[in-house]
Amino acid sequence: LASRGWHVVGLDNLVAALERARQLASRFGCSGRVDLVQCDLRNEGSMRRLMLCRGDAAPRFDMILVVRFIERPLMPALVGALREGGYFVYGHFLEDDGAEGGAEGEWS
Image 1 (cartoon, rainbow, N blue to C red):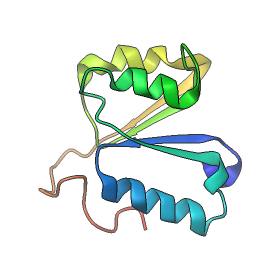
Image 2 (spheres, rainbow, N blue to C red):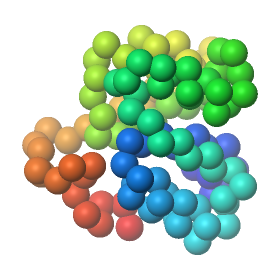
Image 3 (cartoon, rainbow, N blue to C red):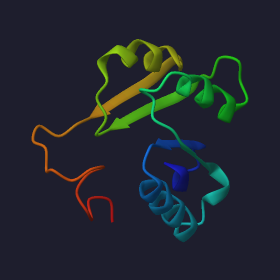
């Protein structure tokens, strides 16, 4: 998305995943459009951190893309962070591969 001009905020609780995202943003020349935040949205206060990284009292996103994270109680808050007419895209695997944070090489 960042390589197509979108400003992207990436969240993950795994440092390695954020570092991989940082490397990809650099490789594709879009580091200036990518903010990466280490947090676990299941922990209290993480939605507040999300707001602060955007510099808004109530962040509004054009799109929220969720991959390999399921925490149903958070869905109303995530959807509530969308701008009017925004997109909520959710992708999840039906089977667990056993690897914490996902299988290696999925996003290469």
